[in-house]
Image (cartoon, rainbow, N blue to C red; front, side, top):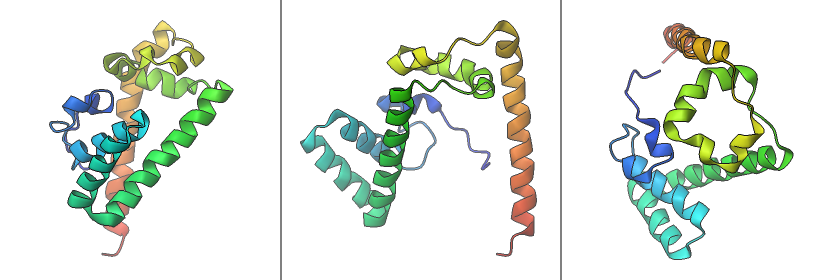
Length: 144
């Protein structure tokens, strides 16, 4: 919505965090990686990094987002929930570029057919355009 260019490779490559365009991505990715790795010393360093940059409230927010994401992923993985067909179609190229298929849970989702692969990216662009329009209208209507 902000029109900022974001490099999604930071999701799967922590080294790409600083150049991702996401504000404070380096400390947020370090926190997420430390939480997943279970390395207590790395987690302490990562927490300090987030507090130093975003404050205590920022740490609480970041930890809550990570915990909620972990919860959702565990539920989805344990029940074998596949991606919804529209999400599968609209994100196939992105997931391929990021190498998401290497994760075990990717086996829960069948590969999209050729028509879905062809129509997915234009559908994603149309959806993003619609969301930007809604955001712009809402921003004009909301009191400041």
